[in-house]
Image (cartoon, rainbow over all chains, first blue to last red; front, side):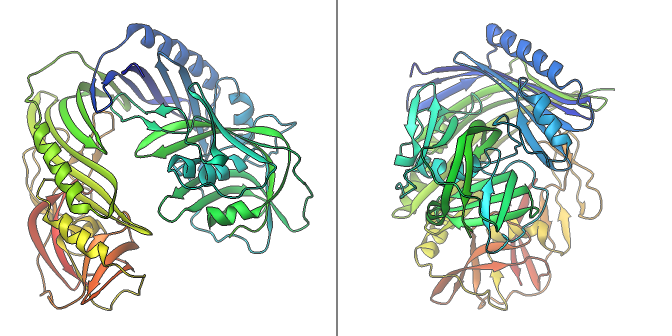
Length: 311
Length: 268
């Protein structure tokens, strides 16, 4: 690391088509490995890139007049990241200018749509559950198999495998057909083998960088797949959490054919629950992951996965 | 008409094993409902926070907590200057936020100073903790836990006076009831919101000092709160539902919960 980090972030909140909040956040941090010195300084080149991207994001959301839309663009010397969180009736998707039209249409349809042909997935939260959950604590339906559609299993694996790897917890015996890795510009980490993510990430120049996931990709190789009769199809996840002291995973299901409910189980139980999978990894449009008070966007991909009754 | 708020801050914090120094300034403009914030270049003279005091407190905590695990350590000192619609004021504050783990439980500690005796007491109890038990019928709640739970208790509370709220207006003493008259603004990047500030329980009843004692929060305070209880030789996690209290005794120690609460020894 060269020890210098500079960022410019613009975030805007649009409510039913009207701008409600706009923030510019800019500064630098110099890190000598023991001490971080952070201060305001606007890098004009980064600001120009950030504002140009935000202009593109505004164009992308211009037609959305019936939702709450939070747009965040962050420019650093390494990357330009933009995310668009759209919330309607307490259910959210996190999208990008490239995918927003499709994701918004799915959300607008009430979260009922199943995505065509391995395209974009319905989404919401993940990580430490920061997107709104539509319901309270509803018990997991008993004696069912779960079919995790639309890449939603990425949230389950993000919690049970990704966060466990971040915390240095021992790897478990997962099915041999499963591969889970984190990709970042700093390299690839085999999360299934317990390797911590390679990237050190931070929300702002004031924050201490932490080894955090950047882009979780779960894939299957030769997995069995047989749809059980007694199944609940999970379409949309509202959020999740991993408790490092007990290794318990909590997943709040927002949309399924059994309605919303909560799964709470030790990660060991989750590792034993994976029964099969099919197809390529499907992009789940966005997980905003919160850890140590720092919210970061984490890419998420997973094939359709079948689990037994986890709880 | 738009409202302009400006804030300058210098802070030093220990976060885990890293020392972080931050020097920044920004403004928030509320223009007919649209809230905008941005950094500002104008500087003012602010005293350098005492990094040695921060480091010393952090090391003391690390020493107290051993052999338990210090899952989260934030120790900070901040010097601030504010300006809102022509009113200028300054403040200094210290904060400690800890998560002390003894799997499968963790105790959470929030303090507004570097007086750490309560950390010692919590660590001592945590080290002896056994399995979860039902809450005793009657209990005492220690002042630092009562401060966190105060918003959830239906008891008479007053807002204590102070010079400035988040809009530079005086905070008056009044009973906590109805809409708060003052504004809380923990960061220039956040919209200010109405809040009761510096809330203190009004004393009533008599606390039975022989009752089991709630010594620590094991999760953030809420309408169902997981806490650590000492009952004679037994120490155990349990769940309480703060609502009614049988007695309350305020203390003069201020805690950084909500928009500020004073310590409250309670009997439930």
